[in-house]
Length: 195
Image (tube, rainbow, N blue to C red; front, side, top):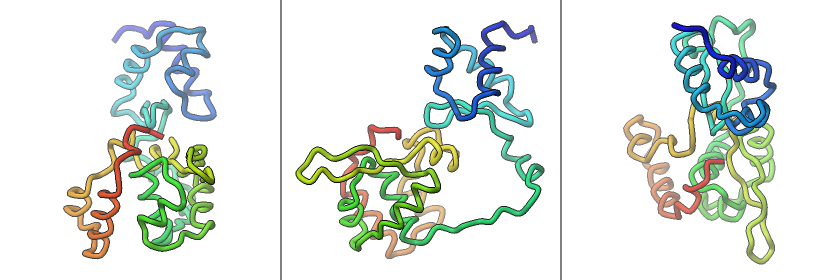
C-alpha cells in the first residue's frame, strides 16, 4: 500500500479532531473546497476491519469503534433507559412519516401524546423540531436526527425495516401488526426526507 496523499491525510485529521460527525461538504469547506469524496472512500476502505471504522450515517462521516470491540471500552455498566411503549410508538411514527405533527402522531396512534413523550425523544437527540406545517394554526412538525440514524446504525431512513422484516423478526404482536398496517397506509409523504 502506498503512502496516503496529503488530501487523504488532511481529511483523516479533520475527522479525527471533529467534535461531531461532518458532511462531505463541511469537510470540503474546511479544507478550502477540495473534492473529498475519493479521500473519504479511501479512508473508509483503509479502516475497514480495523479497531476503528470510518462510517457515514445520515450523510455525516465519523470514526467509531468497531462494533465487535465496543464491549472492551465499557468501564462501567451503562444505565440502560428503556423507552416507554408510547415513546417507542412515537419514535417509530416520526421515523416512518417525518415530518409529522403531534396531531398526525395522535391520529396514527389513536390516543393523545403527552408532551413529555416527545421531550424524552428530543433529549435523547433522536427527534428534533423540523419547522412548522404551512396550514392554519401552523403546528410544529418533528423529524429524526442524524444521531437517531447513528444510534441505530442506519445510513438513511431508507434503511428502516419494512413491515415484512418486522413481522419476520417477531417484533409485531397481532395488535401491533394491525396498528402498523394502519400507520403505513396513512401515507408515505415523508419518505423523501433523510432527516
